[in-house]
Image (cartoon, rainbow, N blue to C red; front, top):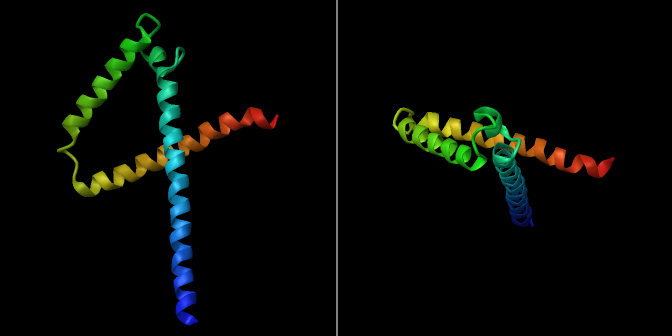
Length: 111
């Protein structure tokens, strides 16, 4: 009987961790998708950054190239510990952005 209770507690913890992990994953995906959309939409961040004279496709390609080059050069400058800390921060920032984008998406439904 005691063994069954311990097994139930362990299974319950695994279930809770899985659900929380899925929620964080979903929020990160919404955050990344929302950020990409905000970046390349017709009135998005890239158009504001580069001005209306440049097409959105060109602006997206240039920004993708810049991000690729910067990530390539900075990969050797950061230690493994700092990479892990930085990746945790990036994940939680995108999860926070996912909460904001989800709230904006669901806000008109509650009017």
